[in-house]
Length: 320
Image (cartoon, rainbow, N blue to C red):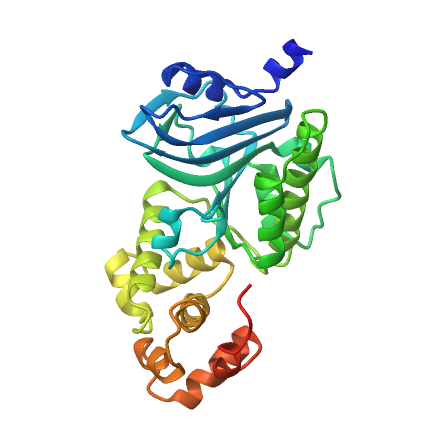
């Protein structure tokens, strides 16, 4: 039984425990006080699927070798971001819960940077294992390309409330040692299933292989938009700053995020409006003007299109 448990602990977690002068107990490593606070947990469900949970603050950065990295390029990484609430994530309230879905061919790096502050989870799955679980429709080039795993690809999906509930259960629900692996594998596979169902709905007909420079550029542009939500994006200006043609920029952005640049911007803008109304208790007119809406009727109409109700009524809803 103890040998089976050791085999179900990711090697990288054991190496981190050695580096931090501690040990892994029941798939969990608690950060010693002299190094920081928080924990890491890891589970090898079988040779095809692994889970890592990171929720910690370290006093200094570390870098360790990752013996579990896939150099052959046959795995898919689901990297969940901003899904675990901590004091540090609350201070960065603009950041949206999301998941990056990445083919292992994009980043064959053999080291994992152990950053000082991290609150995320990774599910690492063998592509052939996923392909064996369901029949891939020929109508979904996105899903086919992801599972073929023959080119470097990245997709990002927002984490909506129904998915966040699954994440919370996977991370926080207390489960006896008897069912710990089984419970988390079921939750991890349900998350993956729901995300693949979302990807299947994307309408891309042809996908371009990504390189690191283009990916970095697209994410820099996205961050610039989020930093200036009061200013609608101008495609030609963005393309010029990215040193891309407008056509290439729009194609890569839609491929990664599943939406046009303007629709993505508008969704993030209204998400921030909802946060300002609910969390910071701002008035409807104040929020509308802050986010660049010169006409409050237009703001109210766009808000209702995205959220389902008008902003004034939204402010009267009870907090979650």
